[in-house]
Length: 217
Image 1: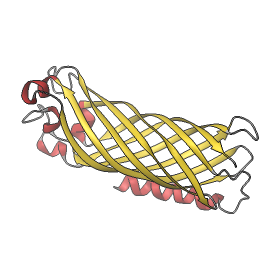
Image 2 (image 1 turned 90 degrees about the vertical axis):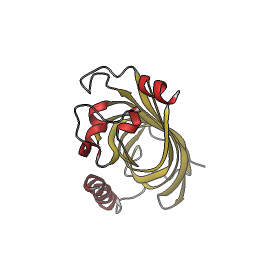
Image 3 (image 1 turned 135 degrees about the vertical axis):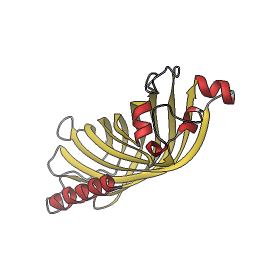
Image 4 (image 1 turned 180 degrees about the vertical axis):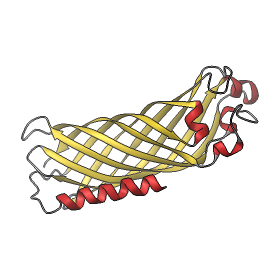
């Protein structure tokens, strides 16, 4: 939670620092596509047994008042099981997290081509963990559901002045309100890890790129 508060304060500081500048481009809305890689996974059990490969989303956001935006979309995350993290092979598999989200944020163009965006999105996710142990014990994947929130910051650059196409650098910090433990791998314990290693909800930092198409009319 301390990290989330830090990123939120950082976003607010950046937005306050640019709020006095003129708004060069005022889009009506935009379609967004994001492709990032999850890193720095927490809690300790999650960090040791999963490797982040993908976190991204697609959706639409609409400008409602002086840079304030509202949006909605879907997102998906995938973590590959670290087969040898527990001192023995636990087979192939991974954790799939499809989700739907709503988002609120603030975007400001500080030049004719560059904008800064900060916001929060949240919604409901469905977690599916596929591995040999779950197949043997459950006859299929382990499944659970949890709400989530994600703090976002983006630096966006139009391909050229006046263009509706843009690419961005994206930074996010996600919180999924479910404790990761041995149940996710359909086991009674996680070999080599003490029970306290599962303390804390699933959370991770993500860094990557995205595409925006702006509607200016």
